[in-house]
Length: 326
Image (cartoon, rainbow, N blue to C red; front, side, top):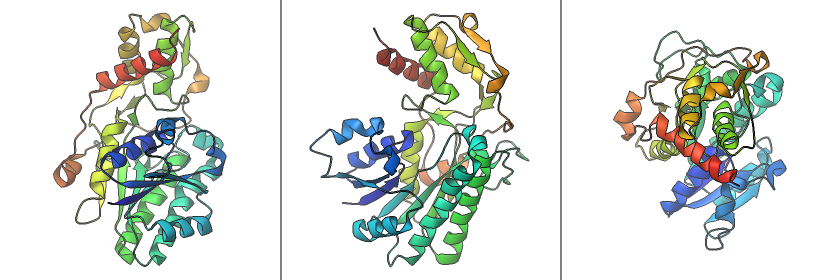
């Protein structure tokens, strides 16, 4: 039986990864920020299961900058695999809190690498990177060799972390990998993200709980995939014979207005009757044409996205209809 340690276990990806690893027979340990000791709704169904919680699923409270506690946890748990998902993940928010964004996304990752460097038998390590590292890309689509040109504090921090993982792999022989993830969504996405705002509002307007939705640019384009598909790739990456970095993407661009069309059509409404524009919601610096080329992931780990864009949007709306049902 393998043991895994997950930072950011209470997030969207962390919750799906926990379910996947438990299904595969792992013992799973998760690091939870002390300030998140109560907010862990995405894994409540697991922690309330007495046959799993504190038997095969264990939570430990620590912050990423608490090197002493994390080192002790690693020495005690001795995981086979370490999945690093923690950090401030909202790109727009990174302009408001650039220092803390960089502290966790950049320095938090470096701190983990330093701890692993000193381990007698370090676990295999996966850092979850982001398409935001490409920012204003010099080529389209982007792959593992595309130059980093981030245009947001979040992208800069992720670029630093991504390069550091490569440096520690090449310089110290760590089995350390990057999953360079393009946008991926699910019913567990946080409500501050535009994708969740759209599906939530479509459901609430259908239920008569809201009358309008205010958004920024409807022309912004992204490569959007389904979070459980991406989490499956996370696990596959750490099962390979040699460490490396892989881009995870669908290779298909969609606009924000595509979300509106699919979501509102699913509930029998015309989105243009309910959506208003507000320039305050425009991004300060919007990455251009971020669309990924994940051919290498197909070759190395046999991975490709399974859920279509339309089915993903409908699944999110259906979940929001349940959450906001009368």
